[in-house]
Image 1 (cartoon, rainbow, N blue to C red):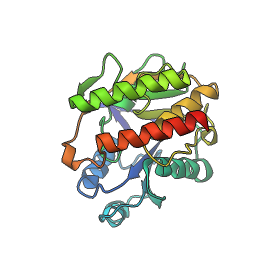
Image 2: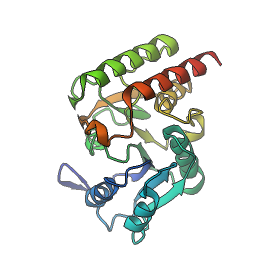
Image 3: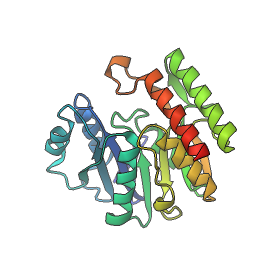
Image 4: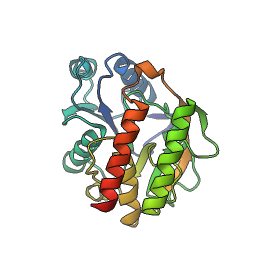
Length: 248
């Protein structure tokens, strides 16, 4: 069984989560519990793939311990970086999991939008018209609480994405909900090892002819000192990767 807004839906789809995991030992237990409570334990049509990518804390051992008794959870490793984790996770899903009638969700280890992205996807009347849905902070119906610096950096970054790549998407760095009946994951594999990877997935999807749209999310930013993202350092890295991807 699957719950959406406290209503039981039976056999809606197969759900596959890819969750990059880097230095999140302090919150990963909460994430696992949220996934288990959202998806009933008897629901075998859900898979949760955690991709540990170079953590310096005990994230890897902790996720193994938390999930060892539940065969819906799988854990693999990649080299360091969000993009590296997404790339390895997407390849693993393509090669090793049953993807027929499946929905793939790419999200963060802290479930930054909770399940608002998935709930809004399932409740969207255009569900069958698009191949990929982005949980977007730029959507007019999104409910946000972010620092001013992050708002500014996000606006600049997405402006440059539209300018350089002609991608008319307000927020390419949200979570992704992908219909695997329609989408070949190998066409979307990011080359970036870092945070530009999500934008790269969006750019490649549009260039491949897939229909992409945005859906609203609810987002409450973590305290800055608990986040593995460093706004200015990581933004500069993303900009340099963007330029490389544009002009390579």
